[in-house]
Amino acid sequence: MSDELDELYQEVILDHCKKPRNFRLLEGATRLGEGYNPLCGDNYKVYVKMDGEVVADASFQGSGCCISKASASLMTDAVKGRTKTEVKALFALVHDMITTGRVAAQGVGKLAVFAGVHKFPARVKCAILAWHALVAAVDGAETPVSTE
Amino acid sequence: MSQGPDWLQLRADFPILDQEVHGHELVYFDNAASSQKPRVVIDALRHYYERDNANVHRGIHELSNRATTAFEAGRERVARFLNAGSADEIIFTRGTTESINLVAAAWGNQNLRAGDRILLTEMEHHSNLVPWQMLAQRTGAKLSFIPVTGDEGLLDLSQLDTLLTPEVKLFAFTHISNSLGTVNPVAQLCARARALGVTTLVDAAQSAGHLPLDVRALGCDFLAFSSHKICGPTGLGVLWGRPEILDAMPPYQGGGEMILSVDYFQSSYKKAPHRFEAGTPDISGVIALHVALDYLDAIGRAAIFQHDQELAQYAWQRLAEMPGVRLFGPAKDRAGLVSFQLEDVHAHDVVTFADQRGVALRGGHHCNQPLMKKLGVPSTARASFYFYNTRAEVDRFIDVVCEIRKFFGP
Image 1 (tube, one colour):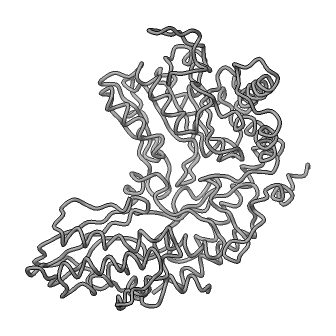
Image 2 (image 1 turned 180 degrees about the vertical axis):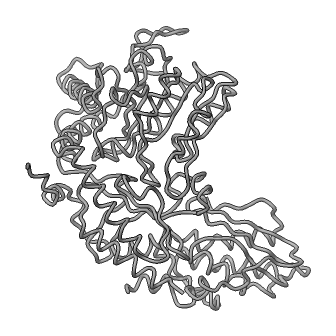
Image 3 (image 1 turned 30 degrees about the horizontal axis):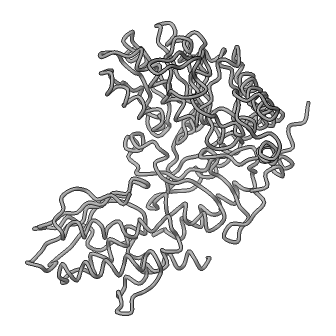
């Protein structure tokens, strides 16, 4: 096993890709965001149930690679209970981490497992796809977002 | 019995193959996307720029004469490569995609009317689909498709009588499917089309340089291929057209090189092929392609096809022995590639993992989105072979696939 593969496919990522959390239609969802990567056909719907400015619940459905599925799984766990502003601030930190490998001082919790993705430029979009769909959902956008 | 080519010695002609990727010897199995280049082709490019570079067809000086002579000799060489009647039937383009777009624009605009049909197949690459969609939108013509039979990836020719009707003005199809490895019966399909007066275009992107091509024996009207998939440089393609059709076609793009005389309000145009080659062409590319074709024919395209087919058959058989592997394309008589899907592992994870083991594969929809939808898969992983690949490399690829199944398995 090479170090790079271990760094990309960390135990937590493999676990979430094989057993994705929140992988279901969300009853009573108030927002829907869609993410599509035309390069690989990854396609996700992210459901959000807003309680005022707070994400009361989040889930996702769709298909894609290990990285994109694990990212959607960990993301939907991470954003529950956060306000719209907090979600977008977290997205900024995660985006920066996935593209540069820098883990923010204030911490991103379990999401730090995606820091290794930046060494695989072709896979950066996989890790960020569900986040774009989530941000579109909390912003109330109704059209699918593409990573292209 | 005569000895076949010495494949290992030929492999040594490719400098790029002698390197490590991520600490492993490179196994290059992405030949259907682009082939590697032998040293003689790289040397031809360097020689041209170091000794002969000048613009073609308009200079009187020595360098321009040399460049023009070598460029036109390249056209003659391509004509021989395809057994075309004359070099005037060879048009240089940027690639297969532009060759098809040229036909769609120049021939299509002139010959297609509302109500006409364009017949394609369900296995076409986007480059042999989207230009026809655009032509259909411009003219009001309609598209029909010969179905693919499913995972075994054959054309369902039982539908041909229903689909190939007199309303069809053009029948465009691929010789070899880039995602399935299917080899289509080109001569048979062209004969059926010709009996109804239907014009045919063959996408030979995956077949030129992989098996012998003879446009007269195939009986098509147009044939397109790219230089970079057959040991030549990138950015260059060929369109072969039947001379009487080319002569009746209006220009594709306007500009220098394609005109006889120009005044402020109108111009007259050269004959084919120069009528279709506006602007300075890819001179160095054509000269290097000439060398690539000499190189391939010295090996022999029939021998190359057999070699690639044996590797594909071996890879197919090894993959078929594994549980949880779905294979696409025909089990027999396939071209030199295998397309597959591992249960519960996405193609991009397969490709990323293999890359870390030095094995270059392709994963995705292979520019066949509608076909992938039909087969019900978002993407497949593909290993595609050329004559410099070896059985030992296939073994390494299979080892990596085993490792991937273990890594991502339940």
